[in-house]
Image 1 (cartoon, rainbow, N blue to C red):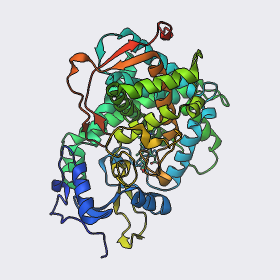
Image 2: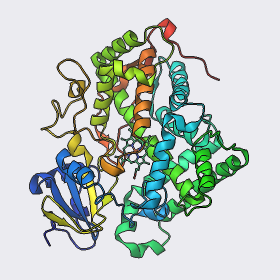
Image 3: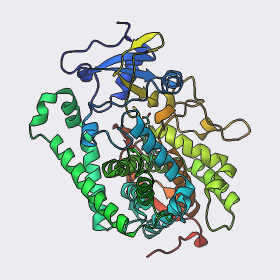
Image 4: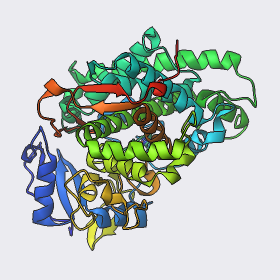
Length: 472
Ligand code: HEM
């Protein structure tokens, strides 16, 4: 009663068949035009509410943050992770304590001697070395960015980066990729809408097996850490977690090995494709908008001069580069439907009744290209983030990290990575759309984490002295 309006569902599938499987976002827009900024859907038998536009999303996720901060227990991924860790953990003590722990630890000073910035800059050297080797040839930057983003997380979690050919690293990454594909694919959907199928050996069983492989991999590293860690001298997130467990040993605590494994898994999964897909989108736009690329390079050269490294602090002196990165995130639209929330209690939104347990879908893309909020909603234009004085400004509708109490906890790390990687790469290389590559395609492959289609890139060293430090 008094539930928001929406398209009529059919038995078993709900409204799922009314969405285009290749790109359902147009259908989300179509329903918003018909029913307004809040409308109802059925995902199978599960009632859901879609929030469209920055005002509606903010009202639910910020003004009523606690009411809408739940997570569903009925998704395949929550069954695989047993709702532990952070991403799929329901609102409660364990989620709160682990979120707080992760946020504190990810801050610069939480990880011992090597700061976050140093860890990122170390990885940037490898990116540049790879690009330098490829100068003049055309390459697909997908793997390079993906491995770099995974390695930054690996260095934070495990204490060291991996050689790109390392067998352990390869297995971990490929198993995670296979698992991610399954949990956001059609088999997961079937698992969720037809529980009766769960007993049959269908491909979704593989997802549980993959998680088990990852769990064992991570536990092996945790055991090694247990033997070598020194209290008061944490090298990485694992050491910090072990220390926290020791501190809490006498109290009732939610900290234990299986929560730790899922938290590490969460950080790895959430921090890899998101950042690397954003870098791919930005690279594509910079290659094909050379005047914007050159303006970034002029600003970078002016601010850095002969200095060896960029620092994160430099962003304050680079409003244009900042605007370009934010614009890349806006058009990149990497997590279009956020991670679904649930209503934790019976509540109200815009005068409608939302019963406890309703799935809440924050349609983040709708805010990122909302016509009333942006000067140029449908084009790649850094002016969206610059005022008339050329200063950097961030409009309220910029919410690629979502908002409220569940807002992405890796936001600062992601922003630091994007800035340090992009500035270093642009300082040393010219990014060129290969002559024989035809017309660039800016269309997306839809997904829980969205990406542009694969493309090829050519790089050229900008100046003779702009070579990278050699790494072995
Ligand atoms: C450009 C990069 C990134 C984007 C666009 C992004 C976006 C998001 C979004 C939209 C959510 C869902 C928030 C919600 O439920 O409302 C999220 C959650 C999360 N992200 Fe990110 N993310 C990025 C990078 C990262 C990185 C680098 C990490 C880890 C180090 C990370 C860790 C997480 C975690 C743990 C959550 C779950 C938070 C919770 O449920 O309390 N993300 N992210």
